[in-house]
Image 1 (cartoon, helix red, strand yellow):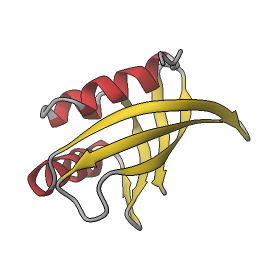
Image 2 (tube, helix red, strand yellow):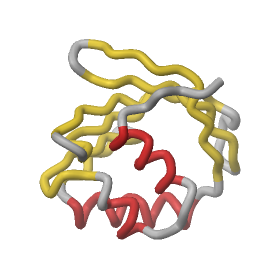
Image 3 (tube, helix red, strand yellow):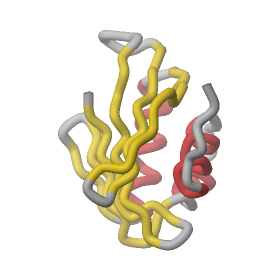
Length: 109
């Protein structure tokens, strides 16, 4: 199934397939906030560090399969498969957008 993702969300999932933390961070606004695994990362420097740490810790693929708008946010459900406990798992990616960038991302089961 092909999803019609908003461009910033599409760019995120494309960048997520690579290992370039700088390209990944370009998907976000300067003061973006990411919440993942109970931790919060604010600003591009922190988001780059989060990305580098995740790439060092895990190898995974992400396959988005559901999209909906919920309370002003774009919610994408994606199947992650990799070398982490509980794999594979379906996770919800809750995006808030500002123009052509992501201003907020929360990743949760």
